[in-house]
Amino acid sequence: MTQTDAPQTQTTRGWSRAEIAARIAADITDGSYVNLGIGMPTAVGDALPDDKEIVLHSENGIIGMGGYATTEQEDPDIINAGKEFVTLVTGASYVHHTDSFMIMRGGHLDFSVLGAFEVSMAGDLANWSTGDMSRLPGVGGAMDLAVGAKKVYVMMNHTDAQGRSKLVTGCRFPLTAVNVVDRVYTNLGVFEVAGDGFRVVELAPGIDEAYAAEHTDAPLV
Image (cartoon, rainbow, N blue to C red; front, side, top):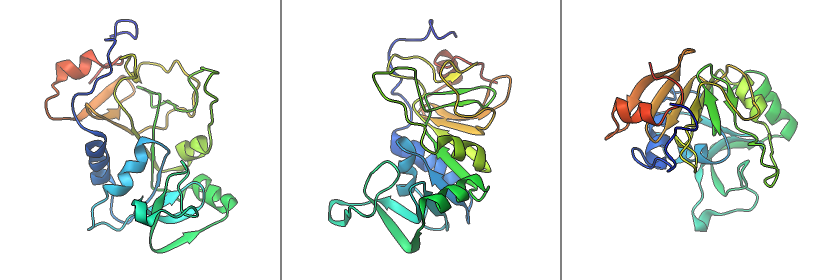
């Protein structure tokens, strides 16, 4: 299916945001150091199972970030990179912004979970600009996270607000990094970058292969 042929309504069937987050959390191995990007990926912090020891890193300098803060827990000094109130786990540390980026660039993160505007079947990532200058783009540390982590998972809706597929043959938007994405988690399922398309790892309940293919620009293999 081409971008122009795509349905003009955003797909809302399948998993909720919390369910996508839980599916990602299930794939993060015990003992991992993980960065959660701004936006949808931050929900993974509330979905991590209690029987795994996973250390969350926040780009703005937190090692040992917890989940979202409740209203009673909100502290203006404890925020994530998206300026949202979060919590700290026992033993958490603050580090200088430079040290935080050295963690990202130095290969010390096992997983990076990022949002995206588009992911190509070659694993190219576009998540910092749509070219719409009415909304100022901000790459932040996305490039560092995309190339510095050992594995890159993307969490996003399967289609955009106009119903266009975000899993594409080739990205239309400016690239963040080339050939970096390992897996994509959307409301329709889990998809692995395969080079000649996306390999279907798992489909969400109520989603069949025909429906997934109809809403995906790139081939499903």
